[in-house]
Image (cartoon, rainbow, N blue to C red; front, side, top):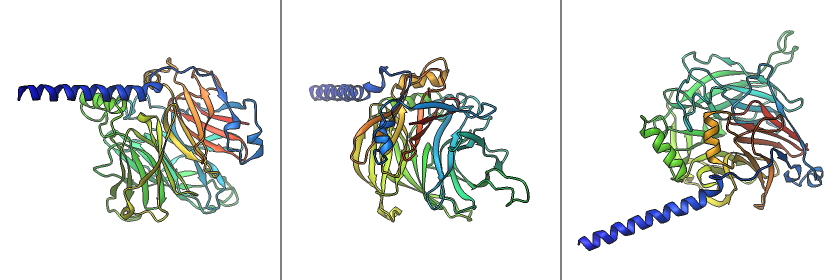
Length: 420
């Protein structure tokens, strides 16, 4: 009996060592510094559906978009604000200059008081304006990660959803996003966009929301990146969160959050996909009903089939494919051509060090994945200073027709704008 126990113990230790060795092997590319250029933008990686992209050869040009007060910074998500006809009204950015003092994913949890904001980027002239809150409770924090807006009817407000990592718990904030008004429509003065507070969505299982994709005004898809978060009492919380990330433990998920607009009833939450290692970015291709989910700890993107009439009765979702990447993907976006654009972090230890202080460089990598699964690099940077450099890239939004790219950085000042 003792001999059998010894054999079982040795077998368990061997299995553990093999699992850790395999994990180190798969995680190795994003644990070490890769040789990257100071910055390089390759327009040829844009979809060849447009001839000027397919024939582009040399590197394009890039510059930073700044606000006059230099408070457009530390932006996590970047998404298009579109009309019902599909025209782009602007880009929306979720930014939090206080991120180095309050980050429930990477730490620390020092000071949650200074609020973040949502910004409107005008792609025509690369200007930015902060969107003011209307009626947002003074007692609420605002530390946004993923944001998304439903398409707007001409001149009418639409619904915007924002993941908010407040001091007490993480929530989904619901706003009415009003478009800018011309002087003629508002009695002689122009009016900028605004965010009117509607309600806060909470749920006992809404622990670590990261990205959000609205399917309708009452149904959201969200990623939850971890099972263990830094909100747990130290040293347990920080230790477990780091172990879950570095060991690639599948503690993340994609969930369906449903609620009744205009009713005070609490939302329901149903799991659509479970067991994802650091479920991060989320993007839906409207043409193919493909849902892309970034698995940051596995340096991969998982693709799922989302039925056109998706309801909780059709869950869980079925995985179609997995796309390995040479970096840890953060956020994702689809273009009208069906190309998937993934932004992320090629050196995870550098990102962790950069979160603690700007003196450490954090490299960036943006890749394009064609509908056929071909991978090409759109932007790379080793990090550092410069108006052509974005550090810790999180999101890329692409206008393939005009050869334009906008990139956000988790701890960067401004938004990077690149042109073919």
